[in-house]
Length: 121
Image 1 (cartoon, rainbow, N blue to C red):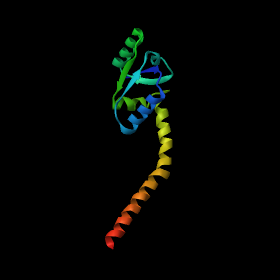
Image 2 (image 1 turned 135 degrees about the horizontal axis):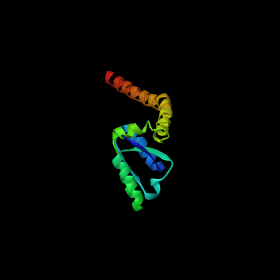
Image 3 (image 1 turned 90 degrees about the vertical axis):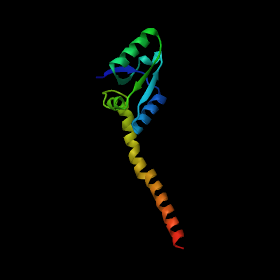
Image 4 (image 1 turned 135 degrees about the vertical axis):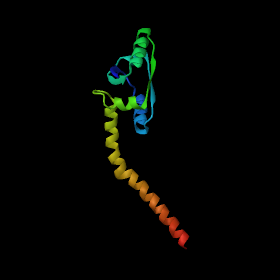
């Protein structure tokens, strides 16, 4: 069971989250005391919520470790920043598949053709 909380996630941390989404890995988010209140919504476990409360009351920061399944769940959080990152990734995929990846494939095919032609001689 997850609880939605508002925190501040830096641009660098958003990139880290985006990479975790792409690779399907877990991640750790370091939140300073100032970052414990913000506009970015994340879903945390009860244990993580307790950590956040304790850190906020003590005037300290905290590191939240998100499992792979928690990162995936955060993709579904209404008002969260992860769906936005996924939206950006989905916009980049057509560009990559339409331009960059075919160019890489053509280069690989040409390389194979060149090697094949050399071996026939």
